[in-house]
Amino acid sequence: MTLKINIIGCGRAASSLAKLWIQADSLQIADILNRAPASAMRAVDDLSAGSARGSLEEMGPAEIWLIGTGDHQIADVAGRLAASGHDLADTLVFHLAGRFGLDVLAPLAQRGARLAALHPVRSLTHERLSLADFRGTACVAEGAPDALAALKPLVTTIGGSWLP
Image (cartoon, rainbow, N blue to C red; front, side, top):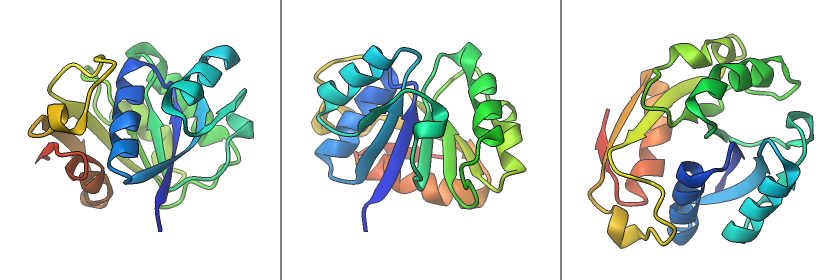
């Protein structure tokens, strides 16, 4: 069974990782939500995967949620996701912001989500980033043991060097 991932904020970093997961056939890109619907549609077209959504409420269930927004938006998105009707029990929710740890995701813990932060130590903005390019990239992660256990395969299947 291929796990599904929803992406909130599918900009350069998140879309680069999504492309790698698609290349590795390790995740199914489910729903994508960006600030502007046209931007979400462009991300879907660029990835040739997923469905663009216009609101958090329109997003379907997934085992994994990536918050790939700008750093200053993560806490707000986490609060909105926590307040949504989505069943987050035992889902993995993680962000990519190097400036923040897990505290910005705190509202999601009350909903039973497993929380993590992933910090690949390389630029993720290269449009043609390949599995070969990414191989060996140090990926620093933080979170509780169950969250890290869920996050590790996302890193190792694309060749990242796992550094919890």
